[in-house]
Length: 407
Ligand SMILES: Cc1cc2nc3c(=O)[nH]c(=O)nc-3n(C[C@H](O)[C@H](O)[C@H](O)COP(=O)(O)OP(=O)(O)OC[C@H]3O[C@@H](n4cnc5c(N)ncnc54)[C@H](O)[C@@H]3O)c2cc1C
Image 1 (cartoon, protein in one colour):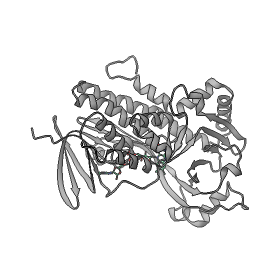
Image 2 (image 1 turned 90 degrees about the vertical axis):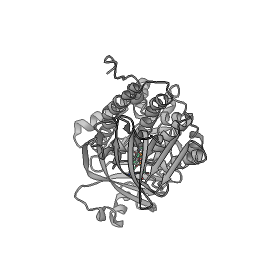
Image 3 (image 1 turned 180 degrees about the vertical axis):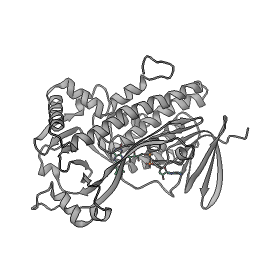
Image 4 (image 1 turned 135 degrees about the vertical axis):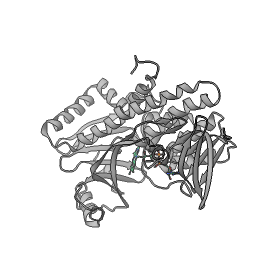
């Protein structure tokens, strides 16, 4: 057997890879992170942290700094163009279950920066930027990675590999781990605007979903601005969708002509629903977007990825430290892949279908369900537990490879 030089290598320094690194270092395990780019990403992308995710980040010592850089959203609101506000749900109703009963609106790059700042001088942590992993092979004892660093080929070896290298994961592709699912025909347009929706719509929540059979939209408040998300028809070109005329007509659907509506930033992106066939292959694991991607309605992509990372490191850490048998690692795939398929994929697809529903019966059902949940504290609590991802965490914790009863 060739020498194993690193206990754990993590491919990718996104939020998922960095959280995994922090939790392993906390368990006194040396970690090497290999990141393709020359620095941490500056892309905004995810900007919602759910209550249990904040609790987890608090356990790692990062929540306080993140909260200081974000905006607390204590409520979530559902409306429809036809019926107005259907229900507003306050996370205070689940304050017995979480220490942070609110969603935090903060861009994901803030988290990765906070984590890097906290780890960079730690003797057990190393990161190589500008290092693109190119291929993976493994034996019963070790994983070997080939990578390019500054134009040079380099080989790394580790006992365990975590592929947190995003949707195009080379860890997944080079081991034929499959990524079944589909791509939605429409793309999503996100416009960032300083328009004050709290003045325009008194009582609006910082997270507001508006169902509309013609063109649904989603309002998300961040510090100093709002993000407005709308679908773009499949037949429209990217160029047309990003044109000033189309972006202006889109924002004007929800902001009256007499109010200025400058657009600070636009993003257009394709939306997929895909899950890897396995989250583990021998000594390598997938976590985050490498393992699953979904539409952003519900803010479950990054949050689910962070839940993957900490589920995995809670098992891998004790195995490496000799406190648990490697057989417990099989629970990772069972727990996280099951809830990804059932809860995360199911919820995000349902969220989209509810907002875009054209059929009258579907619209009435959505309207009545939300109104019923708003009127009944127990139903409201059940909705909050689901959208805060608490149900998926509980469901995962109840699954074990050797116990058929809980499956
Ligand atoms: C517009 C938008 C809005 C979103 N909003 C939300 C939201 O509100 N809430 C939510 O939970 N999710 C949201 N998401 C999803 C969220 O951004 C992702 O789920 C999240 O970034 C996943 O984190 P990750 O660490 O798994 O992957 P990434 O953030 O993609 O990080 C992967 C890292 O791996 C590196 N890498 C890739 N290939 C290699 C390689 N071969 N070698 C070495 N390094 C490599 C990349 O450079 C990158 O740094 C949104 C996504 C988009 C696009």
